[in-house]
Length: 140
Image 1: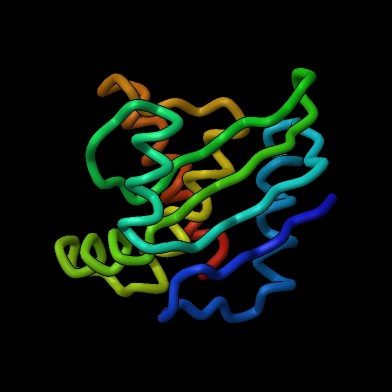
Image 2 (image 1 turned 180 degrees about the vertical axis):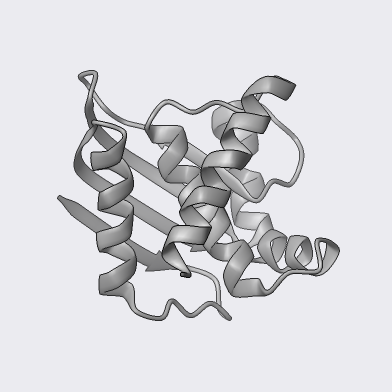
């Protein structure tokens, strides 16, 4: 298992990285997925907007883009891009702490790679429940 964090944006701090990596690995094991490699890239709105335009043909800001790079089912390789600007704005809009919202998005990316989707209302509800479960377990 290889989890790496890359910081392109300023203003983000991840406390207890070793614990966080272990918890992310736990998410994959709980979902019966083998984690081979995972890179989290923390960036700005503009950086993620360019990725959104170039790779997904979407012209809007988003807080996260997850790329599944796996070549076989059940074995996970991926990249998760997170806009720190969006996380800051979302935490203010949702009246939650930056650290809580940042971890929600980190777990959201892992859950996507485990097969969770969020296009329909039903999928969004399942995703939110899984995120809440991860947050409660991580911050207990």
